[in-house]
Image (cartoon, rainbow, N blue to C red; front, side):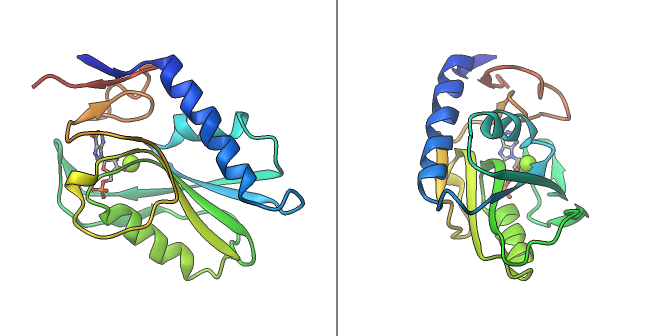
Amino acid sequence: MTILLDAETIRDRVAALAGEIEADYPPDEGIHLVGVLKGGFVFMADLVRAMSARVTLDFIAVSSYQQGTQSSGEVRLMKDVDERLEGRHVIIVEDIVDTGLTLRYLQDVLRARAPRSLRTACLLSKPSRRLVDVSVEYIGFTIEDHFVVGYGLDYAEQYRNLPHIGILDS
Ligand code: IMP
Ligand code: MG
């Protein structure tokens, strides 16, 4: 395992991202974060604790039919959000945007619920892997085409608990 982003680097960037997000919304209007399970849970937990605005949160789970490190491109909704999104400022909180297929699916599903606004925050982006054009307003780090684990991200459900993000040596 090669460390790509250590815990302190991630913490500083997440705090900066929280500030960027809060500066973009009127202080008297709440922000509703929708975390994407499972990978987004650590980023979500750190992001909300770095925010002082009026924040509510919910979770959604999708399955990308992942086999090993390859995504099949088929996305399925496994768990929907609990709360209504209509009229709210919604931000999708996801671990990584790779091909973009998962986020395109999620943005389509959530936009149909008529939120007041819909944006996306991703801790990581691998632009060289993009297959579809999705807009991601907040990106923590842009990385090269490596398969990474830790800080919520897994390989075969392992490594989600690592405090850093590492490249899995094949
Ligand atoms: P996309 O639909 O191809 O953009 O892939 C999104 C999902 O694939 C992410 O939410 C992750 O769960 C998973 N994924 C993509 N790249 C990686 C990686 O490098 N490490 C771990 N999971 C990844
Ligand atoms: Mg994921």
